[in-house]
Length: 118
Image (cartoon, rainbow, N blue to C red; front, side, top):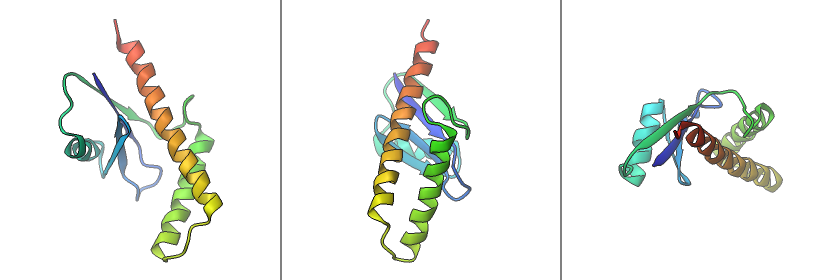
């Protein structure tokens, strides 16, 4: 079974993210994010579980982590748009939060799968 997590945008400009097996795609809506993911990976074999994650934090990725990720992403975009270098310490923190969010999506999916099994 393929499990796909669709994560709500942290801000209006970022769009939704669909994540499955370490692959990520973005779209303006959950459906477009799913379509973009399928374009990258091809149709999933067999049954597919799609999880749409709300904006709020949970036991896998807290509100504080979500807020910090949004702050760093906003600053990263601003520096990118002005062709300025992003501070290495901030980049390391951003990379770590992205990795933690991906782990949280995987853990969330696994927990949902356990509850969905008869």
